Figure: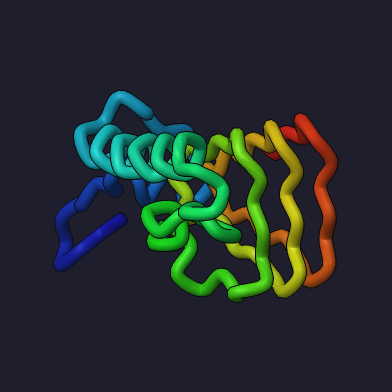
Length: 118
């Protein structure tokens, strides 16, 4: 990347998003994974009646997720911020999404138990 005649290197997050080689041992990526781990932990440990379709902290990672999307516990994701859920999406127990790139799950998709997307 060049800016005003000098090279400006991309952040590890920018490299990851572009599908390029990147180092996951980066402070920014560490912080994002910690946020995701906390949200996933809340989702996986809340009482089902308190959790609803998607626990509040996990819902914050998927801000555009429709109200009718449903994620069973346990669930795991790497960052969450790269996941897009459509209407009437159902993720059964044990789904894992390693979202180092954009992952879009379209309307009406139903993933079975133990599905891994990477």
